[in-house]
Structure formats: structure tokens, C-alpha cells
Image 1 (spheres, rainbow, N blue to C red):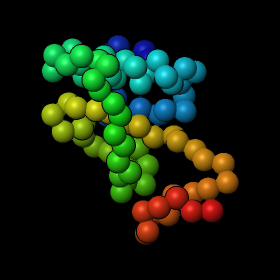
Image 2 (image 1 turned 45 degrees about the vertical axis):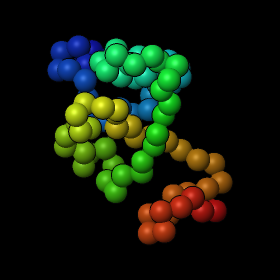
Image 3 (image 1 turned 90 degrees about the vertical axis):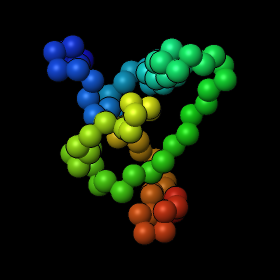
Image 4 (image 1 turned 30 degrees about the horizontal axis):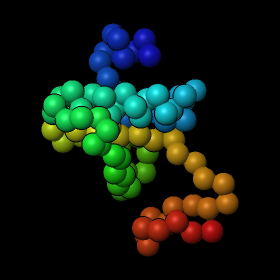
Length: 89
């Protein structure tokens, strides 16, 4: 977090590092609501799986500064099939 203060926001956030990820997600909604003058209760999340293998391959911020890139999501008993673009056993 010290890096955020000194260097600005990262291009990709390591989601697993957050002790309370719900607070981070609420902060993202608040930032978007303030920027575009939208009531926060009118917003919801949308997710898109990227083709980048890891956060090291992300070189830029999301388009128009809308949203964030995250890495470090894990599943028990399943995996993401990159070829078929589905969750599999």
C-alpha cells in the first residue's frame, strides 16, 4: 500500500492480499459513482476473464479509467479452461 501512495494505483490489484475484499469492492463502486455522478445503489459489478496469463502481462490501466484489473482469484475443486472459456472440474 505504501507503493500506492508513492507511485499511484497499480495497474492490477492482487485480490487475495486483501483482508477484507468486500471493502475494496465497495471502494471501487464509490469511486465510479462519484466520477460519473451515479447513485451507488444503481451500480453492480460485471466481470470479464482476460487472456493475460498473469498480472505481469498487464501493461496499462482499464479503458477510460472505468473498473480495475484484479488477479489472485482461486477456486477449490475447479479451474478455468482457457481454451473453452468455462469453469471445469
